[in-house]
Image 1 (cartoon, rainbow, N blue to C red):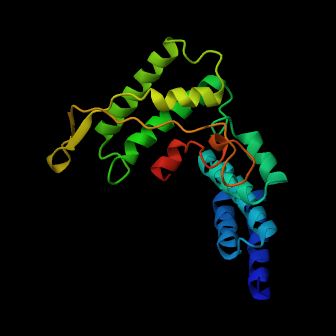
Image 2: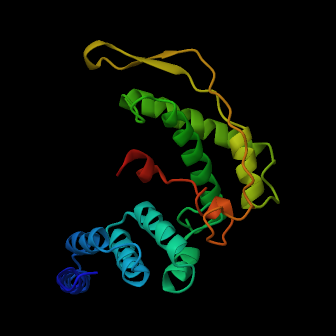
Length: 227
């Protein structure tokens, strides 16, 4: 890294930490992001350190999914140290932010997986209306209640549950947007199924973690919506 760039990054880094101390994570995020963008990945120590503090800023901004996404990328580059420790402390067996209760971990993993699959089949990768979003969320919630009532999740690990989540997808309707924002009209249709992956296999990126906690982690809803 050139001396001028290093000096600029050092200044941005100090400003970022100062803004965090002043309870301004919004400003700190911009400084740490600037450091990440200007630091070559080959300088792993400086790059990963900047990623770590960027993740801390996201947490302070109440954007835990983006913080986990940042840490997930950083820990693949540096598999030991504070970044890996923080990632393992903050994520559950699905590679998502811990919710405090295993039942909530399961629900958010299931709903994020189903909604992500649904949006992945749409051209714009987003909901076209609030009506469509409400209907899809209600279908996912009802399907989750039925899955819980079946008793199939009892005594299973996160990896085993993830296999069930992928094989037991709800049936979603198709939607046709009405004229001039008049809302979405629901059409009959069946949502396609996806093949299960080997969730416990070591991730191919070389991180040493199971696939479902690393590159195969489930994106949070804020990640899916770009928030």
